[in-house]
Length: 177
Image 1 (cartoon, helix red, strand yellow):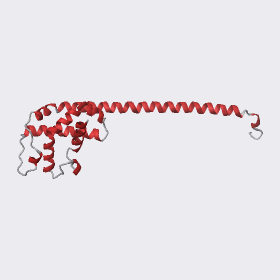
Image 2 (tube, helix red, strand yellow; image 1 turned 90 degrees about the vertical axis):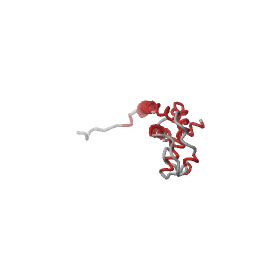
Image 3 (cartoon, one colour; image 1 turned 135 degrees about the vertical axis):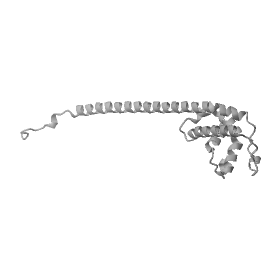
Image 4 (cartoon, one colour; image 1 turned 60 degrees about the horizontal axis):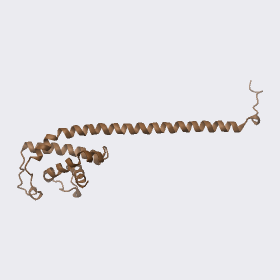
């Protein structure tokens, strides 16, 4: 059936075939560029949506600790750093203030961890709550370091302190800013 068929390629206009191939390549390139642009916009929108959801969560967390922050602001000073190192040190705070200190430090540690690890925007967090972080660290520094002592941790970040380390690091950055 196909034995009598011959193809005479010398009569083909190869420049036309080349031009058609070039046009098809340009069209495919345009389609690929368009899909990359659409994909980039989609990823950018999903990141913004994730950030908005995390900041909504952060706002809720900060709202929940407002009363505890007020409790800490009106609490007597915890003590000087030299005092908390004494083996006979007794906390001047009662259970209500201790509970407030714990709740505030845990929530601020969580938020600071998210910022320090790049999961939420550190710049936005500093703009929204930087002064609160700095103030809370001033109120809780002796308390946090006393907890580190009772857990036999180093007192300072430079020595490898673990408890509330992200809170301390972020609060100190907020003080500098």
